[in-house]
Length: 174
Ligand SMILES: O=P(O)(O)OC[C@H]1O[C@H](OP(=O)(O)OP(=O)(O)O)[C@H](O)[C@@H]1O
Ligand SMILES: Nc1ncnc2[nH]cnc12
Image (cartoon, rainbow, N blue to C red):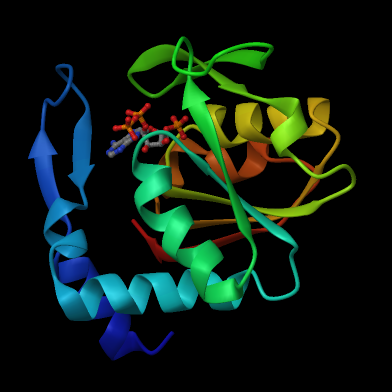
């Protein structure tokens, strides 16, 4: 992405100190999602990163906002990895820690095509706990993450180093 486009996207991310907990600098991407040029630029760039995959998965909730239009743009299906308790069973689940909370995500294995090569989409990579859990969940469902793509990577939290077996595209890094 050009420097000019990246600067435009970065100008639409709002810093919120001490949210949701003291000491956390929350990166609020809502203004970017609400901006027509910004939203389209992000969806197009994430889709470009996923060329060649045969499925997109997104992690609840902000990963749905980006992942579904990316799947549409790529002409492939979308699988929601949901926070625990939202899907009727049988489900497969993985618990994990993120920067400011603990959580559990679930999927229905029969909605995941066996052997699918997946683009895993989320808005923010912080500690990496969420993406690692998403990849584990997809693997348990019989698919493999080919690559991950996020709008924003928070570099100092070291998430990229935890990802292991798949490459990551981040449109912005702070
Ligand atoms: O790299 P990590 O430290 O795991 O953090 C990144 C995750 O944190 C946020 O999700 P959150 O669970 O707050 O949910 P939301 O999308 O429902 O707001 C964000 O949307 C990522 O999924
Ligand atoms: N600092 C942060 N800002 C926005 N989303 C996040 N998810 C985890 N850490 C975050």
